[in-house]
Length: 116
Image 1 (cartoon, rainbow, N blue to C red):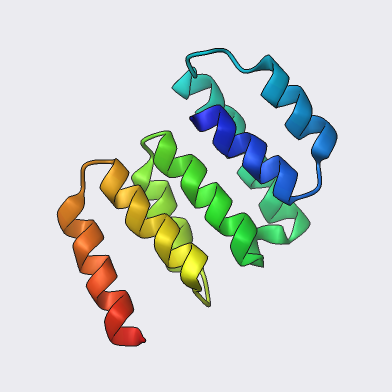
Image 2 (spheres, helix red, strand yellow):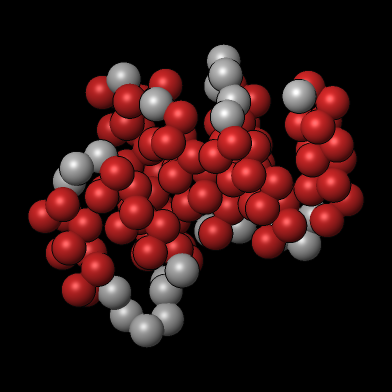
């Protein structure tokens, strides 16, 4: 699950060799700690290259943090975004829900509806 999120990020950034390499090396059970650390390093690289402002890339990073159980990091990234779209709202709402935070998920959905 977490490894799949990293494969998704690599593919969206056109790092297809890395995406394929990670995909083929995934174990049946993800090691959350290992992939979480790898994801944080990858996030740092995205910040350095200026790709953080790409909403699809940012959404993939939010998904990765959510799947690692790092919902605070996902929320911080969401809150730092200047703009939001369907993908970013959905990533954060589902991140809350997948981490057992149904109330927060519903509140964010209501906020999204109000903002139009």
